[in-house]
Structures are given as structure tokens and as C-alpha cells.
Length: 258
Image 1 (cartoon, one colour):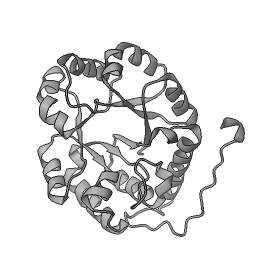
Image 2: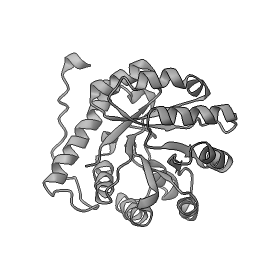
Image 3: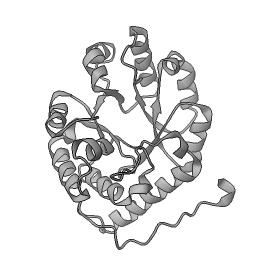
Image 4: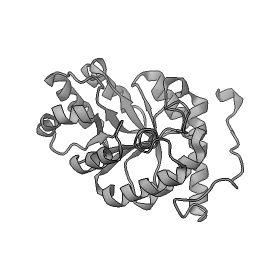
């Protein structure tokens, strides 16, 4: 069954919080400095029982040395995917494939209209689906039912290309990069869609740093566990299931852990 992941910069305190919260998968944020220290990062990361993906630095101008370091870290951690933005794929994709032909490059969608979204899915060999970006930018904060229909169609067509998913808890009109539990209907339904296609990559609660704490991470895992119970009981069998009748989440986090 699918599982969810968290995302953080590879510093000791964030590894510890992710482990304490109960995550078993993580996407590592990187920049040039992080990749230059890839050996130390890898040594630290393998101390934790986590599966990893890594996000390539967001800055467009990168040296060949940085590309090689990204490949080394990817290999050292046996990563699920290397997440890149389209400009990096266009400029560095061929070189990265030369350095690591077996690497899963997963290109993320961003501010794309409907036609540009289709072009993105068609042109790239591997994809990172950012659900928040689809809802806010591609579908202009449409009703949830329309978003789910759009995603279901996308997944039917491109499941074989999908390596990675970003799914923070977005709601129209609200800030980006909030925890999954802030948008329960979105999260429960998209998890079901991904489960239906047998998705095996990372489903990442990509949140801002202020939410990368034990309380918010555990709340996301509580929602995931609720999804597992409902899914196993057949109560989330279709992508358009409403969660209006589901009892509120109970935050069973001991005060001593906060």
C-alpha cells in the first residue's frame, strides 16, 4: 500500500523529527553547498531508516561538478527519483542521463495552463506531479470534483511516467505548502487515486519550514492512517468520495512529545 513522505533540508534536527514523527520516506532539499558535502549528507542519511528522493537545486546555473555530486548522492542513498524543474531538465537532462543512465529524472509541473500541462506530460520521460500547482495554476482553483476528474484522467494516461508526487494540503485562496491535514478531502481522494494505479514512488507533504515540526508531521500521519483504515474498509473506493460524514481527527499526540 502507498505511504506518504516528508521533505526537509538534510540537517540533523530534521532527520530526527521525521523519524520521531514516524515517517519512513523523505525527499531531501538540496542546494550547491549540500551537494558539495554529499558524502557527509549520505553518511548522516543512512543512519536513519528512511527511503529517499532528492530535489535538484532550484538555481538554474549549475556546474558540471554539482551535477556529478547530485548523481553521487542519488546513488549513495539508492534514491527513488531526482526531482528537477523543467528549465533544469532542458539544460542538464542529457548530461545527467550520461552520468547515470538508470537515474529516474522526475520533472515537476509548475505554472502551466491546461495545454502546457499536457505538453509537459508528453515531452518528459519521467514526471513529478505537484497537485497544488495543478489546482492553483493549471485549473485556477476550480471545484474539487473537477480537479479530481482531471487528475484521474491524467493518471490513467501517464501512470507509467509518474515517479514522484508533491501533495501539500492546498485549498483555494489559502497559502501554499501547508500540511496535508489542512486539506483532508483533497488528501484522502488523491491518495485513493494513487493507490488505484499502484503508485510506488514518494507522495510528499511538501510544507514550509514552520510546519516541519513534530506536531504537524504527526498530524499528517494521523490523516494517512485514517485513510488506510477507510480504504481497507471499502469506504474510499472511488475518487469522488466525500469526507463530510467522517468524524473529526483526534490528535493523539502526547504533550510530552511536543
